[in-house]
Length: 118
Image 1: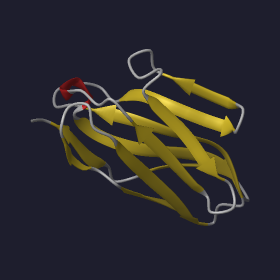
Image 2: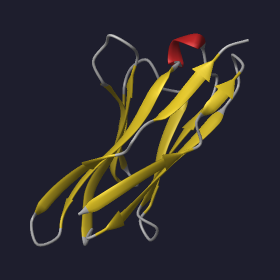
Image 3: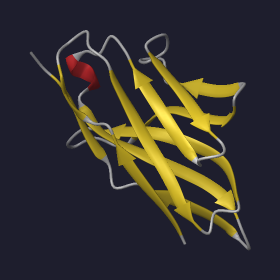
Image 4: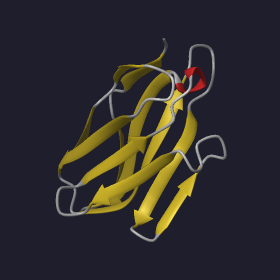
C-alpha cells in the first residue's frame, strides 16, 4: 500500500508564493508519474500539473508560467512551486501518484488547503 502526505498549504496574499510538497511512502518500488490536482467546493477535481521525468511536465493553461512542478526521485517526493498567486488559485490541492510494485498502484493524498486572500 502506498501513502501520500502533502504539506505546505496555507494562507497567502495575492501575488505571493507557496511551495507544496507531497511525499510517497510504502510499497512503492517505482513511481510512473506524480500529479497535482485542485478542487473548489461544488466543482470537479482538476489537474494542475504532472511530471513523469525531469524533462516531461505538463501544466493546466491557468497555471502555466506561474507554477512549477518538480520531483525528487530519491525521496519519492513531488513539489509544486506556486508563484504570482491569485484568489482564483484558492482550492484544496491534492497529490496523486501511480506506479507499480508487485502490481500497479495509484494513490491520493489527503489534500492541503491553499487560500489566496488579502
